[in-house]
Image 1 (cartoon, rainbow, N blue to C red):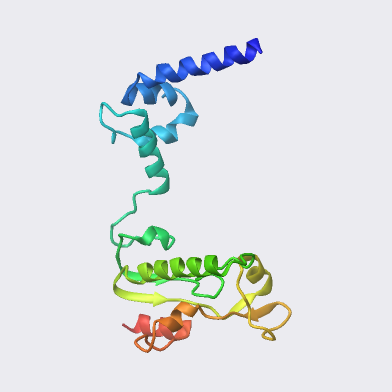
Image 2 (cartoon, helix red, strand yellow; image 1 turned 90 degrees about the vertical axis):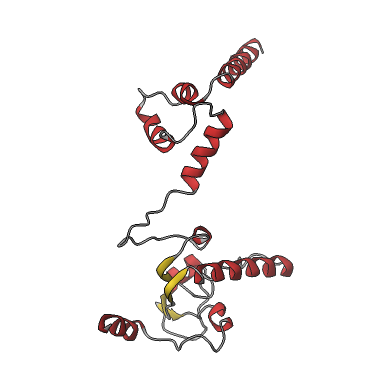
Length: 200
């Protein structure tokens, strides 16, 4: 018990001493410049924090840098992101890939509560709309028909029954594509779209 109390007191004293430090002092204490493992975090933080940054400020800066990295805006850069990350951003050309039932939208087949299923579907529909509205000039909604059965099972793609063979099956396009309505342009095979894109 004495060892446990001693260890607790040591941790408490260390926390108290860290609480009195701010900004660069605190960073140097937690992430020493001499330690190789600390360098990635020191690079993330950089000089973005004010001189009086508190522990919570430093925590928030690290969390933001890890979960919301700065995205290049220079021309010629291809940005790959989830629909969640696309909010607030835009691009001349946007490609939403894998518009397949089981991927977009992705449904938990183990979920049995209809209300939860509907809520999940509504949220994914909202994200799909957000992704569509990121395009300033051209929007490409991409889906594929032929899937390896082992990949479909692993990802959660529901293949059409009695299609393909033992190795391959055919997927269903996302229901969100049907919901776009008659204003949506006619679907093109990838080769047809590519021929048209190259001829422009």
